Length: 210
Ligand SMILES: C[S@@+](CC[C@H](N)C(=O)[O-])C[C@H]1O[C@@H](n2cnc3c(N)ncnc32)[C@H](O)[C@@H]1O
Image (cartoon, rainbow, N blue to C red; front, top):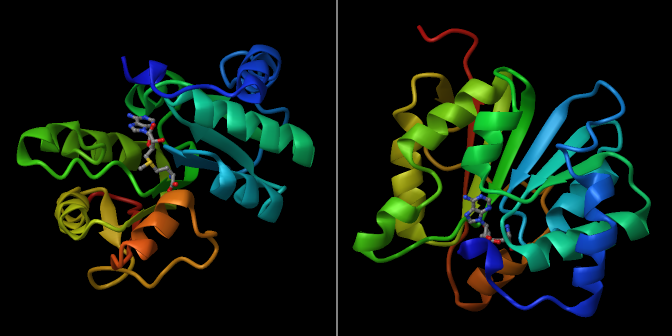
């Protein structure tokens, strides 16, 4: 199963054993009311740590299925001493379905989702129409969904799917300018090394469907 992927370092294993119980959303809800921001598929957690430091007055949730990444994020946030981050180690589809209320999220970030380039694997891509509907429904009116990818066919596919969701509105014409609030993630750096263009998308939740 995909959650078993990758080898854990000793520090990551220790973090999962000792820190995860203290940061897991299910066990420890946020201590205060605040805007909620969510990063889906945070990888090693560098962008989420930076987001937490930049917006200490927000509640932030990281969702990731990759145990090494969760362990790495836990070590980062414990070291940084931030108290505004929670983690869910599960598929985002499940976390949204089971743990997030409609209209409860101010901002989603999906940075460099797995591109699954082969046609027969497209069904594994994260930003499927049904998942986009779920994201849109969990956003507050006016809330935003940011996506970045270095895979041009994925960018076009995501733009098409996002544009087809009636609850969402494109904040730009087509692709957006780079969101400079985000630091260069591991996969963004990899895309740059390979000479790929980087595509940003930003959609906001409409107040009504009309
Ligand atoms: C290509 S990596 C990008 C990681 C990071 N955002 C970056 O830019 O470096 C995609 C990440 O999404 C995670 N992922 C894939 N499907 C997921 C899902 N259904 N729910 C949560 N995370 C998922 C993977 O485990 C992986 O860490």
